[in-house]
Image 1: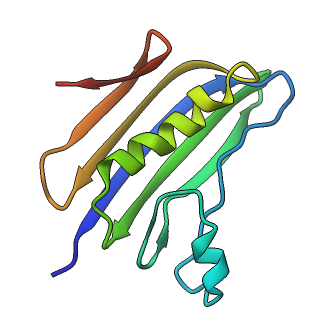
Image 2 (image 1 turned 135 degrees about the vertical axis):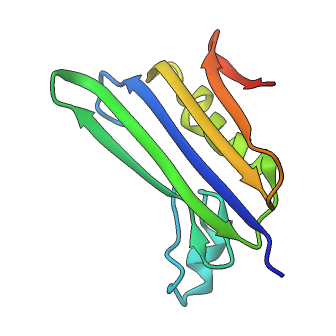
Image 3 (image 1 turned 45 degrees about the vertical axis):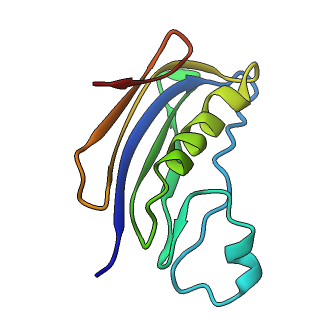
Length: 125
């Protein structure tokens, strides 16, 4: 039986430079092992999470980062938390985080919910 981790998240941020790092992912059909080895986005046996950066048309320096996906054979909850830390805390001061939320369900367990509050991720219990 496979282990699955499901993730859904959104971050609203400002970047005066227009640069927002989201990392390197993998599509499940990739056959080059070096691509899998160099992935910085959490990656299961069939590929990584998806992440996109979308500009907010009404506000030139504001962006929405969406992260979603289902990772097969991946049960590292801390790895997901570390990735969201990369998207937020590790990019300061070049970006300002307005708000964010992400959820994860690891291997069918209960849903964990995190919100961006007081300049860090906090788990809602």
